[in-house]
Amino acid sequence: MMKKYLLINRKKFKIAKNSIDFVNWMRKCDFQRWETNHEFMDAYAYRKLIFEKIKLRTENEDVFIKDLQTFNILKIEIEKPIVDY
Image (tube, rainbow, N blue to C red):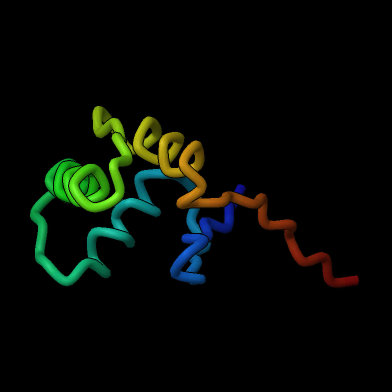
């Protein structure tokens, strides 16, 4: 099942099948180059803490995504399949 991941303030979204795919997309769209999702999540969380006083967990992509939702940075919607009759 595909989901629509919407970065609320940036008004950008990505259709992805899971949190790993979404974080991959976030990492690849970042201005800096990161080797792994974990490196990216650590850097993103550091920036949020320094600039916005938001503490994000980075143990894995699922926890990271849940925190993004908790702090209203990210909204996730289930994509309804298009049925063609």
